Length: 391
Image (cartoon, rainbow, N blue to C red; front, top):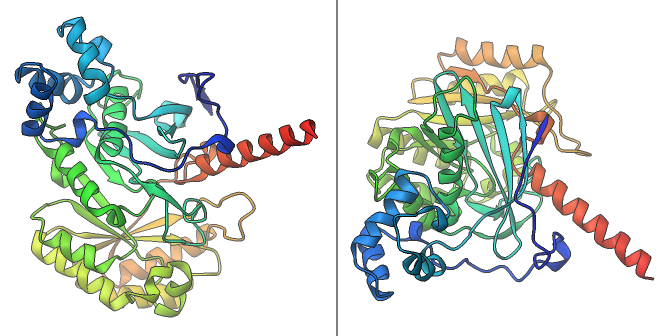
């Protein structure tokens, strides 16, 4: 594991959960706006409309997030524009790397003290960014570190996009050795339930896929949006005319177990969730990714593999089995490899395309929410210790 340099927290921003302010949305940022709104914003500040394209070219085209580096803008213009269109949204608290630098995780502090995470994963043919859409999560899945934190708030459009622009800049710098320099894929599988922050996530997807300089210019087909199964939002997504990949965090093929593992299943049952997913596949022609975290002696029985195979046989779906990355002190653990192999065999025998996700980042708390949970625990312990000294 490598600990990367981070921007230090300034003295007037104490690095402790005990001083976190009330959750609040951040100030407006360039990435919150489409190009027309950016032009209106810069002219309202007394700047010519073409400044909007200049700012957009720097931010989305050249991946420059610091206005002081935009030296083709007059100094007076930079001073006027920075607070209104390029405020600092994300401050790195901790950055870790493993897998010889191919996996890099960043813990961010937002303007109100909330914590979120993003991960950059390099492969020989691509680089993928995994980003957060919420600070915390309200879905309460018991095996998930983020789910156990609860929901702090939704992220803004720009807070989501800024994670990607930062990670795209890291990619472009050549820091991820053995991978192409251009970020090509984004997965909304970090902290939070993306479809619970629906309007902002959809607008973030549009910023990421609109050609530069208005957006980042990624392919819609290289964007994956995950959900635990919020059926009304899934059906809204069908009407968006987007061609992103939909990933359904299923984790159990039967309602009895899924009610426990994914509490939202108590509202929308397996059959209803899968119907919405298959309708999305029918509209887009894109395979649904069925996410299934294999948990020892919980959901890894052969009969559950057979049931999942029967449900998915003949459907436009692919199963992505995830060896569980257990959280410290958790009762949940990953399935043994022989059990995992038998689960895979049964699904493939049923004609269901199945892969096992590459396990990365265990030594840097790679599963979503683990790094933030550790930071919160350390801060709370530090605060308690300080209080003890004061007494």
